[in-house]
Image (cartoon, rainbow, N blue to C red; front, side):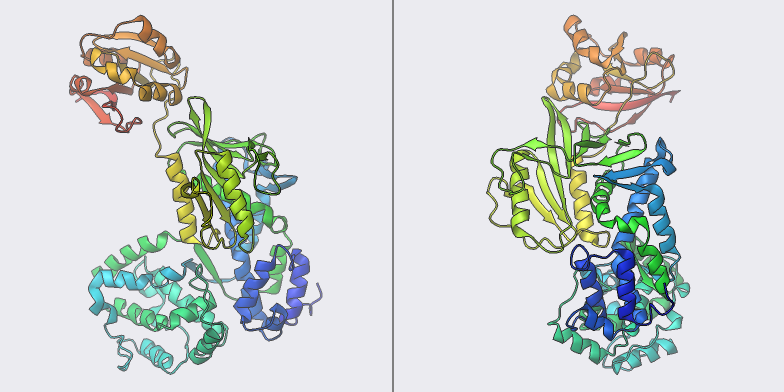
Length: 607
């Protein structure tokens, strides 16, 4: 591009819009609105805001508007890397309809992103969490500790001259540079996020050239509007400053430095845990227009809107941490097509679950105009049941910039009717508005909307992941077939008479058929090893044999130890007592509290 193409903010915007293929009257309207609000929300439109904005301020605003996509790309790249157990990364790609997103495209974008000068990396707090330090310090030392040396009616006296100078400037309405004595290197590790948060807010105000009075006037002119999802949005900073947010936080950081070292360390350890739960946000330093030009010309950016649904899938998988999840990659390709695709299998759920994309389910007389005789949700979670698979969760993904009440309502009704046992959730990149109150009464309790849902909306994202996790359930043991080979783990099942009610229960039979592989090797024991067979043969064995009259499992377990170790034993209280001299470890009972059954793992060593 010509060297003068970025001579002012408006020309830079026009040039970068062309490079990035921005649809300013279409899919990128929200990006336009973000930049407009960052620069000057009182301006008639973005062009007017750009006309009065320094180019550095515009580039910073554009950088902020791109961040959610960079975070999505990072999550998708991480998902790729975790899926690399079988496939080589360089061969991996995602198909979304007719579009293909390759591993290297996300790597390329994030490599370019990392080269941009970042002033600060901070936790992405929302408005409600902006005062998280207040909560921490009250918990730490009570209200007196909170207000110590911070009363506005008294001259500042923190013991740090540059902090006192900053507070005096603040009290006459000016935002001075962040005091150097409060930089993060002076604090114990764990408090850097607290420092960076305050430093970032001050930097944002100063970049905009605002005094306190000017910032408050702008805030009044927009009727005190703020952005609930962003603690560091200029509007939210202004709202927080109505409560003298930065004054109290700067003063309190100085108070922390006066604490004994062990108390500083204690406070830092608590603070680090609290801040660790949040995603991250980059506060830019010096940005060159050509840095953003390079980003906006990359393939990953060109296909950014195809990635939102893929990102939602990564968050569904992330919610299943602790589970054995097999992602189904076909010849190096993970498919999110408009036809049904089995995305992943959750091996350690009880019963076993799978995640589908675009699974089609018939429906009679749908209310949605675009639907004829079926629904096809973006994602659905199915569990193995007695008559096939049952859907327990439906996730429909929207990328609407604004609430569409009719469309959202139609989705919830149609998808709930087609999946009568499922919890139905609609997630949206933009806002979803208030709960829809006129849904049919029989589906109200199993319908939900979440939005905005982006990498920066911490609470919404946490709620979504917890909902997915609840529907899948806690991980249970998944025992693979040991086959005929010796020296492998085996399941030993107590078949003595005291186990009769457990062995005959529907819960146990279901567990046996759904959690153990059909060809898994199991040993049937009482006072002897009665049989070693496949799990699929157990029902036939029970029908042809009587249960043992006594329970003395130690001898058969010792016999099994000659070929297998460790051994998983399924028994009851009587059987457990007969094993008390062996080295046993209690493990999770997949049947919960439904039956008085005990699962233990035994190792060959004798206590």
